[in-house]
Image 1 (cartoon, helix red, strand yellow):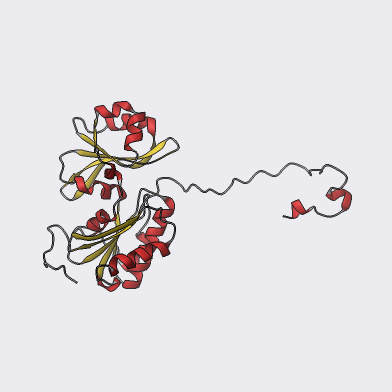
Image 2 (cartoon, one colour):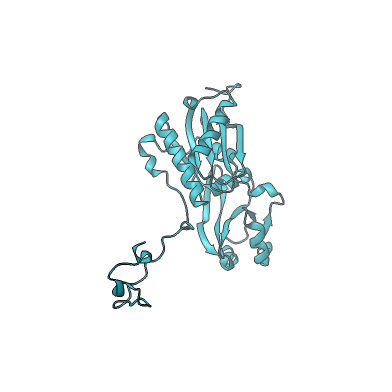
Length: 274
């Protein structure tokens, strides 16, 4: 289905594109028609289930008179970001694409954050996902429609951020972006000497509209529905939940205390059986 004007934005492909963003604190969906953002919706809640996300997809399509069969491709944020959120978003995108027989586009969450600043002559520094003394760091710049990173996305110790940036290209103006910018710049005061941050509380919001527009780019790398296993998340860190370490077996038999132990009664205790 074509847009009302029939005009395709320069640098974008024709068709209706669904964007899914679940890598951060919002669960959002958006629609881009011929490269133009026509709908965007987000809930201020972490993505926990495909059912919740699919209800949003149905709503954003239905509210604008569209059906799943109208979609030409699906873009999904693949991180860095929330372990559970990425799994939910990617699984939903894979299911939709497989059922509809359309391609997917893996969209970097950092590049989506940086899309509004694509026309600026400066380098972007992403600081996201601060946790346990580490932060997700990436730095680079837009060259036309292409993102070129000179510091690829990596989880690094907070106290190494300044040194890593100072080791980058000299005489570059840096613009800091991401939900961890304020706290990291407070912790590393000398980062202010390297560049500035956007004085806007919305600069760190991970918006599904940016995911949809990047996925609608003419040069986007399409993943066909027969190869959806290539749609992989960028975690950079493991999940919070970890399997407990197995304790080594004690050497020799352990004698329970008291006369009512197994050796005294000839049967297992309830605690051991459980």
